[in-house]
Amino acid sequence: MELLLWIFILSVGLIIGSFLNVCIYRIPNGESINDPPSHCQHCAHRLGVLDLVPVVSYLCLGGKCRYCGEKISPQYACIELINGLGWVYSFYHFGLSVEAVLACVFISVVIVLTVIDWRHMILPTGIIVFGSVVALLGKGLLSYIHQDFSILLKSLLGGAVGYGIVALIFYIAIWALKKEGMGYGDVRYLGMIGLFTSPSLVFLTLLIGSVVGSVYGLILLKKQGESMEFPFGPFLTIGALISLFYGDQLINWYLALWM
Figure (tube, rainbow, N blue to C red):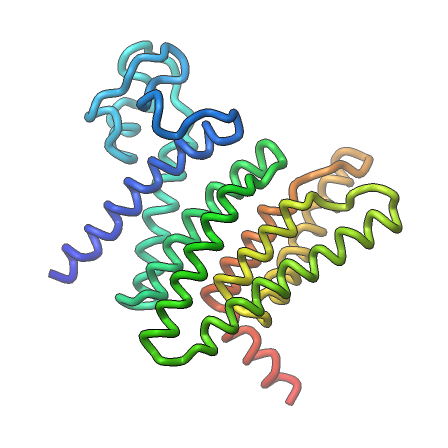
């Protein structure tokens, strides 16, 4: 029964991952996510049920469209697999709990935001609002279940701190550099991350994201010979995922090291 449960969680994660691909492709182009139905990007042929089995269809078809033979981007299978494994790990880490469900939603939302930001340098507000609403509902439910409303309070404070600190950086950059140092989507994004985590984990997310982003920026500078704009959202995602699963342990380890 336990094996069947893990297979079920993985399967649902893979299916949701398939839907995430639709969101990643259509939302930046201003297209509906439910109409028209899934179709080949090359020949526009509507895909059948056998063409839409997550990961399996891609492998069985050799990464090509069944109807026109054109190559299918490996992104589709990768996103499905990453989301499926992320869901499995969430339940492994948090157990069968509301926390695990929230982690699954968080992973799916940040996958969409990360890929869109990397490709288009935008973080769609609608997706961030959706994630924020789910976070508040989930934290509210946890507060009710445990009769501990500090859970919801931590979420609200995390959102306020996340939004506030990056908004401050955003406006200081405009004042000092006379231009935007980052997009305002990053401000909203860290606010959403804060709602899923806590004030302390927001700071850890920003720290990790800034360090990894700076290293990437230096590598880019060395290769290109000049500074170039690049999205910050993906690096916030790295920090957020580390913080979500291991943040408290990292903070406790750091405090124990210096006490």
